[in-house]
Amino acid sequence: MDASPTLDDALGVYLGHLRVERGLAVPTLSAYRRDLGRYLAHLRGRGHASLATVAEQDVSAFTAVLRSGADGGSALSAASAARAVVAVRGLHRFAADEGWADDDVASAVRPPPTRRSLPRALSLAQVETLLEASSSGGAGSADDVVAGAVGLRDRALLELLYGTGARISELVGLDVDDVAETVGTVGAAGPSDDAGAAPLLLLRGKGDRQRLVPVGRYAAGAVAAYVVRGRPVLVRAASRSGAGAALLVGQRGARLSRQGAWAVVAGAAQRAGLSSAVGPHTLRHSYATHLVERGADVRLVQELLGHASVTTTQIYTAVTVDTLREAYAGAHPRALG
Image (cartoon, rainbow, N blue to C red; front, top):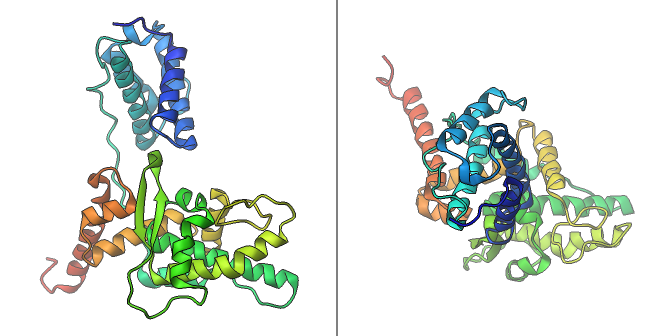
């Protein structure tokens, strides 16, 4: 066994590994740093100065602390505690691989069970209502022109969310060049009746994994209209430069943030009379659920969503099965006793 670094040094090396070699996103890294910082404080309280001396019971005790808050920290929900345990297991696996410990003492420790919650999906009618509720503006005053450009941007964002199943972080990270083929294929006039192949969009997902997803004609038409008639207005009207190559930009010219995109979806949901809980991920869930309901193979949906494991995607199969059960119970004369 190599000489084991101090707890703080081990954490620094591990976080660097996650950032550089695993490509974890900044929010995920922040969550790991927070959870593992609490874990290291737990280990110090039990007399450990390095990971080399930690035993399985030390890790198991931490899972109980997470749920009870006995260390003075917040008592976490089962889902949050499970996330922290995953971080701890990763740290010990890394320590064993690096030779800082003889064994991976956390390998047998399991996160606390979590209640399985099915994703919320909108009906097709609700999706269409939401899309139609995107901002719109006239063509009169300068303010009207900017409002119209914002409406085009919002429609493009909403259509892409539902039309590609992308994560919001993937969409706000797009540059104009990323959709050049989509715009060129459809043109600014909007969707056509041509039966040609759908254009493809390159998305960069978690861990910098890339995937190609087809873009339907409505989403492609909305993007084309925004790029040609909307984005130039927002860039010109900006009080400061900063749009750069960004596809989706705000009224100040900078790349639209995740929070800004959330606000777009929430505003459209409110205007459509839908629940305030509707967000970008709702459209991603709806995209996947509607594909499975219409017969798409779950492994195909896995590829489209960019899930590393098909197990994650199979939850949408459960959603469809539940829908079938409800329909059966409500319609079959001998379904209920």
